[in-house]
Image: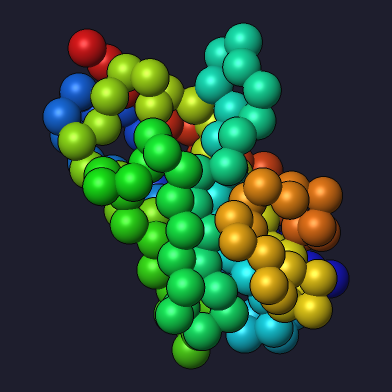
Length: 130
């Protein structure tokens, strides 16, 4: 049974940092592209960042670029999202998702294709106060 579990969310002041973690089990981790999505109050889900199976390719949304860093450790089946200089508009539930390399190979922005991610976590809440 595949499980995707996020952790690391919390309450932080604007300008602060958080590091989210996502652990995936029950799958061959290096056969999956990993991505982070978020959904803020009253907003639609949006992609934040994605990383290729070996970590060589990383992509970011415009709002995340320059502030967030995605990384992965295939030996530990973990993907991270380091978030710096957080803003109140980053407040959202953050979700981690896994999508097979076979489906996402060649896609420029992994998270632009959420329908190709077949395993999702339940999310971790990030709240940024002003």
